[in-house]
Amino acid sequence: MKRPNILFILTDDHAAHAISAYGSRVNQTPQLDRIAERGVRFDNCFCTNSICTPSRASILTGQHTHVCGVRTLAETLDNRHDPQLQRVLKKAGYRTAIFGKWHLGHGDQPAGYNADPNGFDDWAVFPGQGDYYDPTWHIGTHDGENSIRTGTLKTPGYATDLVTDMSLRWLDRWQKEAGDDQPFLLCVHHKAPHRWWQPGPQEKDLFADTVFAEPETLWDDYAGRPAAAAARMRIDRDMNHNDVKGNPPPGITPRERKLWYYNEYMRSYLRCVAGVDRNVGRVLDHLDQTGLADDTIVVYTSDQGFFLGDHGWYDKRFMYEESFNMPLLVRYPCELKPGTVIDSMMTNVDFAPTLLDFVGVPIPEQMQGKSARQVMLGNPPADWQESVYYRYWMDAERTHHSSAHYGVRTRTHKLIHYYCKPLDCAGAGDINTGVDPYWELFDLTADPQECHNIHGQPGTEKITRDLMAELSRLQKQFGDKPEHAA
Image 1 (cartoon, rainbow, N blue to C red):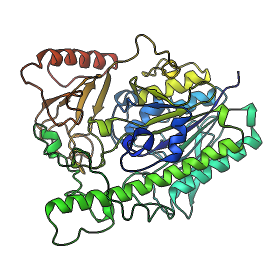
Image 2: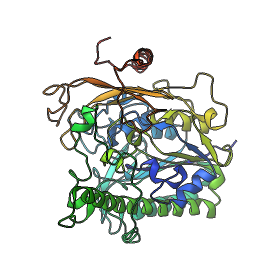
Image 3: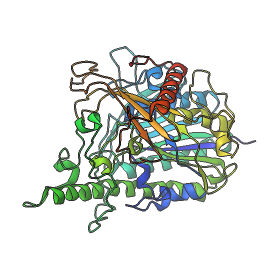
């Protein structure tokens, strides 16, 4: 059987609830919906650490962030580290390329390793976060053994369009040079819709007169959740001119001010999403026009979710659903039934094992994730996961004051432990403004918005014991160290 190609599209901070295939109340994404309509949509896909660099490391390695060594934004992925999806596929005969955001380090690191992309035949990636307009790129190639940087390039234009342009040119070259003789892994990694949310020229005037539906938790008061109250990511207090491209009108009430910030934020964010959607359509059209669609696994996901005014916030980091939940759309006409909606739980550490299973390449033993191929085919294993483990390591980080925490989510409940004390547990580059250790417990059936912390309330003793036991089991399974007393 012919081995399939893989087109892996990864965006930054794209919330599932800003995709119309997921029932968005604020925008339409017709091109992304094409993937869902002809493939599968995961409704319970979660990241194991909701921050860009760690999540990207888990996606490539199939490992939790404490295992692959990328727990925070300050840590980089050692390109000598095994396993990595692209390196495994390259050894199996795939041609590999990545264009766009890498965000896993660059150049010589203090430890002496080079963190440029490794295992890719061709690459052009942004330094750090990259720029939306006229970006600079680090470009490189494979010298037969290692990926090496060959230069720096600056190009005029808009990042989302340019990433797509490079990817389409590479596909044309691949067809001429390899075609059916060598399948490909092409990683199309967009910067958008990451902050500061600068839209492309085709989208800059979208939503100009739109008044967006308010999220149910826009007016959250954070009662019973000290970490949420301490976080600095409130749309009406912590955003600035760069976020909303202006200043609120003078003389308005506090309520009007919050609504003004919410709507301006959504305009900027959703314009960037619209640019991504348009460019995904360009790539899907190319696959159709070149006859590659049936033989190509198309994956669309983001490195984590994002708060879109939910809990009155922007940003991510927390184990609350809007940040914790990832979009995941997969199309592969040869195997996947169109329009399938999957309720089974999956995490970003399962991505690499799943893709390797689809293409018939052995899954390295070091990968902690499991293949979801049979889940997608409608035959979930009897022992498929019914809970997921999460850990965010950056205690009271400088910008958003989000406290370090870990937790477990089941079908019906979520238990979270914030474990760092003030003046303690500060990581590299962090500040000491955490919260006193405490627990949060949510009944996701009765309180899907996670506004009512019921930990310690009468009647919750059994579910708390069960979740504590499951949390301990998962920490042992994944080799993580608990911070709470047994």
